[in-house]
Image (cartoon, rainbow, N blue to C red; front, side, top):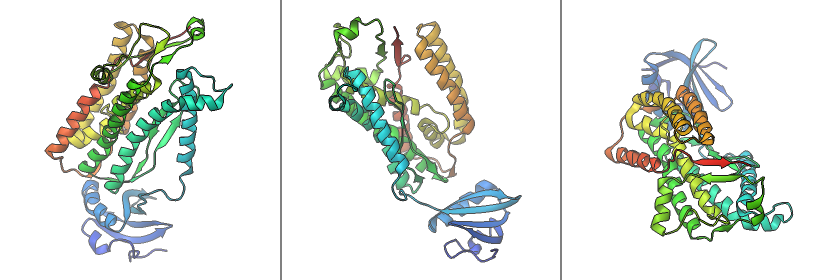
Length: 375
């Protein structure tokens, strides 16, 4: 039903009058829909109306319906509404897939002795799920702090793989209030994940190496996986006085250390400064719209890295990895980063934290993260 009076929950028309001339107000379920005519630019409009609706507990966006401009306001739900079954199912599926991957690293048979396999492989699952979950939890907590609607983490299981997962993501909805919030949310994940990664790596280095069965070493079907350890992981091992490689082929590093490697690899990938990746959010918050110039260079740099790995280092596995990420970065650059409502710049403290985060991210990089030498 059309009306020129706002719903009780919405801001008064008088407060919108200077930027948006309302001629029709409707309700559509939980939505409040204001039909009208913008009187200023979209940027100025959103800077004015967004805080007015947030005062009333609504997230607002400008769109068109049947050729008419509308302000659509939806209630902000900062916490999960009921049991988040999709998150729970994906979490449990990822636990199972990482347990399966863990049995490969510990060289136990999950079919003949499933209980024993779980009891042996759980440290690997705990390490991988811990670093990934802590990373996403950092985003989630900071999203809640800034009043940005965000989902709980969605873990991504990959059955029958050497790691068991492709990581985890959270979904954010609505406008980013300002560059400060964009920075805090973007940087919280890498920082939280790095803390967890350092702890997991240090713990893993104190655990006993795994003994590789002689039957595995002698088998013609054995596939050798060689990890490229980044400077940060090598540094932790050096400080602790623990080896990462062994002259004896029957000994290999404890799989919990691989969990630390996963955390560092994920941290570096997320800090690539393009689009909706953490690095894209951080750079967008630090330098504003100039971030697009940096994002445009990222695909070329990744394709160049792929060429270096292929022609100079002669490693085809890692070449494919960086080519894939080159194309992914093109897509991320096309989508673009989140654009905050308020474009006020960051303070010096946040700028310093951002620079330090990227420095640590570089320490998580290695040109050949993983090399598979097949039978």
